[in-house]
Image (cartoon, rainbow, N blue to C red; front, top):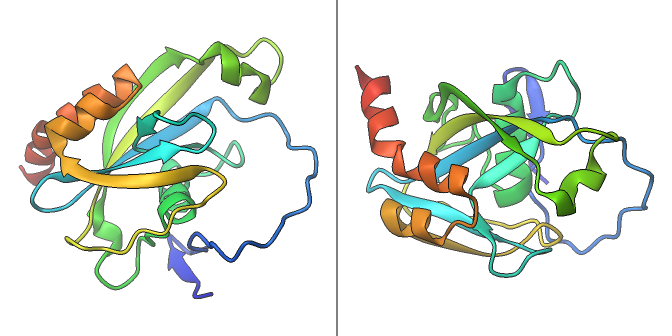
Length: 181
């Protein structure tokens, strides 16, 4: 497996080698996460289907691994883990990841609250976009996602189960225009 560096940290792309990982108790999730809208120059957006919820399509999302983890690192780590796309690799330079400097707070779906400490019901999500070349290889983490689609941004937004994810995808052209000013 090739390893890559991002912001001085080592990233490991998703693997489908079928190895079993021992189940150790996980610490509660940190209610601070990222959402990364991955897109091509043609504005096709990558969406992935959740393994635990067939029919639930989304962008890459994920929580910090530790409280002081920088959000850009969380974004890069989650993109690598969930799609195999490694920021900092050939074709996907670090500058391709854009921090929108935008966050939203939302209620955690009741069926996923057991992953957090007792009493935690809200999450703060920080939004990013990632420009990748057309035809970039996607390798899903099979325990997390079962399928992926590249769709024009409006179609991708319409297919997402989460309203905040839909809104983020629809904001993509505006966010990119702001960034290029």
